Length: 414
Ligand code: AMP
Ligand code: MG
Image (tube, rainbow, N blue to C red; front, side, top):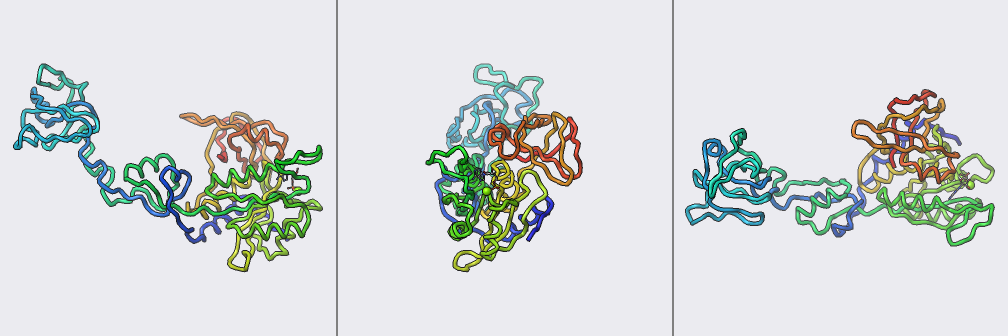
């Protein structure tokens, strides 16, 4: 059975399935363990932010119209962490003709409507005067209470991926722990008679199983929990036994054994186990033999999605970024997102291939005005060293062959 799709059609298949996942189970994790996780409950502001009218400058709390008119008497000082209690019981409001020295982050006293920056006033003894060329407007240098968020507002929505910005905001809301989605468990099954694991010394003709490790790292970064299975040899019975074990996980990733070789048995074994295929190849390079489908889960309870990724390590990683990552993010509760494409300007002429979407290891140099991208020389899709020198893949669409220096193209980030 052969079901070869164009790149965009294959991606559509993945996104179609990604849209259909039920929400995963949830768990609570300490705030600092939440980086990379996906929120399963909103983070809610426990009080107004800021909780008081906050001065954003060191200076003097004043009435703006008075500051323009003439000198003001400085009657006190408010430091961050303090609040203005007044000089006496009657005086908790800033008196006319007065100013109060105030520090960044301190609450502006009632009655004041602006803060004059210390750099913009002249001080003489106990009185201040605005510099002649400065005009102070009401509201200047103050963030009013609740302007950033109101108590009870959801400041982070379900489905948000937690990183440093979210951790800081959650901390500001008093959250010592967060409710996040459980990570999907992803079985990783490398296939190939030539493969040996890291604890063995390979004979000259043997190859170390690098894919299981590369994939485990990619899975973790995409929000999954990797479960590396033993290497499967290219024999039907053992493949079937290990695939049966793998499908107890939430998602199955196979590497190798999906090309046209005599011992590429993965598709055949999957089919014999009742697999349904959404595609068995994609018009892309590298990554053409990539397979996507679903299997009955173990015990016949529901189904498990699987990917058969090509064994060549660069193909494995490119196809992971293109297809596995969007599906896995959706399974992790982060919603539907395309692969991480960006735009960059080609630094040199490049050749594509008619009819194939190409993904070539490349190095992007981000710039403020524009980002430049340059290909990395490589020996093809087995070249892990070149892949590691790259920081993205230049994407060359299938419609044309010549891409010129200066042209803006897509890159696939990783
Ligand atoms: P295959 O997709 O099985 O035809 O393998 C294609 C190429 O990728 C061959 O050169 C394999 O030796 C290599 N390869 C397959 N699986 C792995 C793996 N797990 N780690 C590193 N290289 C692999
Ligand atoms: Mg193989």
